[in-house]
Structures are given as C-alpha cells and as structure tokens.
Image 1 (cartoon, rainbow, N blue to C red):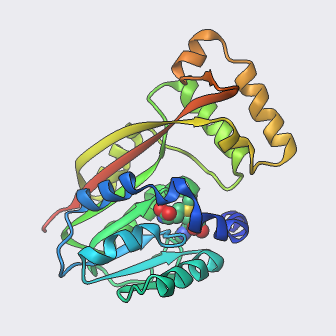
Image 2: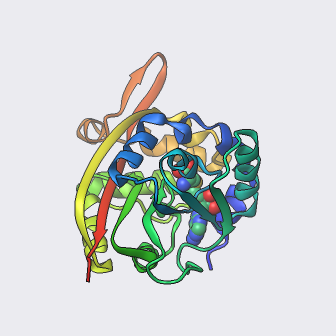
Length: 253
Ligand SMILES: C[S@@+](CC[C@H](N)C(=O)[O-])C[C@H]1O[C@@H](n2cnc3c(N)ncnc32)[C@H](O)[C@@H]1O
C-alpha cells in the first residue's frame, strides 16, 4: 500500500476542515445534483477526507458511509459531524483499492478530489463499481489535465512538486476509458478550470520543490503560457488548474 497520502494528510487534516477550495459549495452542489439522490439511498463516499462530500449528501439520502485511509482526516470528520449534529454519516477506515463492503451495497458511490492520490485508479474504480447496486451512479470529481501533451506533463510535474502524494491527474479521455473498462456507462463527463495563484502550489511545498515550481513557470514560452493560462494579476502569477466530473452508471444486469 502507498502510505505517502496518510503521512501528508495526517499533517493537513485540520487545514482540510476549513479549506475554502474543499468546502466550495458550487462543486459540492454539482456533485449532489449529478448523483440524483433519493431519500431512501445509501451512499458511499470514498476518500472522504474530513467529510465535505459526505455532509453535502446527508440531507438528501438515508445514510452515508464515508471512508478514508488517513485516521487523522476521519477524526476531523467525526468532530465536524458532532458540531453540526449530523446523524446519518458514519466514518470508516478503508483503502479505496480494497473496499470492505459486499457487492451491490450502495445506491450511489462518490469520490471527490482524491483519485489523483491513488496508485491504481482503475483498480479503485473496479472496487467502486463492484459495491454499487445495478443501475447505481458513480460520481467522480478530480483534478484533471487537458488533452495536450505539454500541459499534461507540466501540470502533473507541478502538482507532484506541490504534493509528493499526488500520483497522476488524468485526461478526460483516460477517465472515459477507465470508467468503461470498470463496467460503467458514461452519462456525463465535464471539465472545468479554476484560475488559481501560483502560491496555491508553492505554499505547502518544501523549499527546493517550491523553487523548482517557480523555475518551471519562469521557463515557459508565450504559447506554453497561453496554453496554461499563465497571467500576472495584482503582482501574483495565476494559472489554470483543471478538474473533471464524471458520472458512470452500472448496468442493470
Ligand atoms: C484532497 S483530500 C479530498 C477529501 C474529500 N474527498 C473532499 O472532497 O473534501 C484526499 C483524501 O484522499 C485520501 N486518500 C488518498 N489515498 C487514498 C486511498 N488509497 N484510499 C482511501 N483514501 C485515500 C487522503 O487520506 C485524503 O483524505
């Protein structure tokens, strides 16, 4: 098992509770909307962190099981659950690559902003599909990269320097292939950019990695800057981070 995410997230657990990026209501509302929840549904939220996605589903469904491999993230989630009086979310320690649930247990499975930490996304998707009921929805939201070799390589390099537990941010075409191979029919695939300051990448990186991030940006030519939407605003460098939402439906057979 890759234990790097646990080490990184054990240190960042309190930050995730308050992180504006992870609490972003627009994204959470879209994930809920795409899942089409019913009040009788049982939901699994994989790699829940401190539970932002699980809590967003709680008012719309019967119950949510929220799993993660980092105990410190789950402990923060437990605190939030108590503070907010949420009764129908249960936290459980589990690796996304080996989910401790019977086949066909859940009506909806979600996984938000986490798959780029998985060593084998295809295996995690097979597990998520296995525990879904036939006709159930699998909703993924994750960091992504456009279908452009240079931007793909550069952004993936920058993000590993930003956080050494990142493995790969996939293109929409890779998501499409992996979802189909896992046995889910793609219903929606939508990419969206966020224009973010370079400091979002450098502030938690160690010094050498932050210097390399700055050097990569400084070396971009005009076309490469345009492809990554690198611009200076108010004395700060901004660039695009891309995200993808994917909805797959498990066949009824
Ligand atoms: C960026 S946080 C996202 C949290 C949450 N899904 C959200 O939307 O706010 C990524 C989470 O993935 C978890 N994680 C990384 N690898 C994992 C794995 N193999 N299985 C389960 N959780 C994992 C980390 O512990 C961390 O809590």
